[in-house]
Image 1 (tube, rainbow, N blue to C red):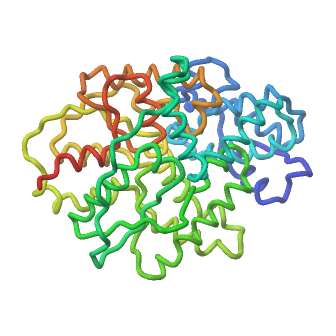
Image 2 (tube, rainbow, N blue to C red):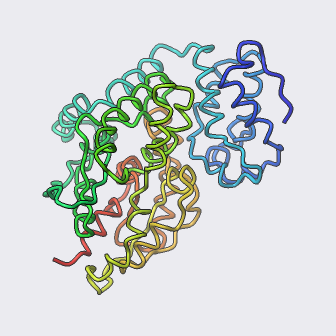
Image 3 (tube, rainbow, N blue to C red):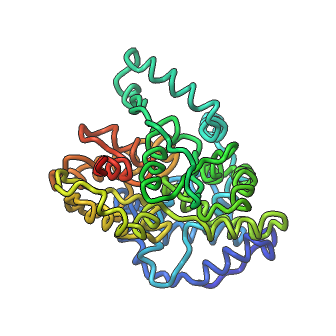
Length: 409
């Protein structure tokens, strides 16, 4: 794709990166077949190819409007188009650049901007989010049905966290919302890894990975969150932690991209690159330890499960089939899931900012997950888990919680 960048962006890091991405696009349209919003809306401007043209026009200095911004807002950044693209177009990164520039040029309506600001200020801060969630849960019986359904029910207790007793130590991200929404995920991961001779620890002061604010177009704030997390983790890495283990694939895809996102920061570029290189999704780690884990598992298969592969895992991190292999070898019977490449509609704050599209995607995903008659739905991301649970009577769990249940005493 030929480009002619406008003066305001020519020669900048973002402009140079965007131009290189645009020049890879050959207009083939393969991406349209796997784009959830295009499949729902049938509008070329709500497809990756259409949005690429919109970003190109922005970068070339054409007038942009609230309509242009709306088409970019409706993108889930699921990155299914990247999996499909034969030319290797890094659409997700182009969308980030385009949205960041768009935010500077198109003023949002007051209430729309206020909603985004509240999400950006509350969700990444556990000290704000946790008590507000607790209040919402207390008020749940008195709320209108539709509003009550949006408040997650109280989770099961996390259970004991093993003491750090092994020479092998790895870091886990406590994150911003997962600890309040489902504290048992990291605790279950810690107990499973403890059985394998690995101590999983959460660093004090380690909070949001930065993805939330960055993808709400508070990109400078998101980068600050990334730097703060690097600072919290760095003493543990220097003390010998051998890896950073991600139990939320949405956080994992962002942390794996720290090296790229902070490459122009003289103070943090080297540290960010090291952290990205050391980051592993939990399924990658467990997959490498399966031979040691299998003798500890209960032998009798007693559960049919549907695995919902989050977009951040299968498209963002390009990890496909690994969690499914772990679950199959652990004795679970995996039921078929049609169109497993399509997004469930959670996508960070998308379910709040684009509720109607999100609900349609959730209905489609739940129908596909339930079609094989599973006893439960397993996933690898807290956002997907919370989103899907509101809409089905089937239990929706993180896969490591289900895996721990199969471990013998």
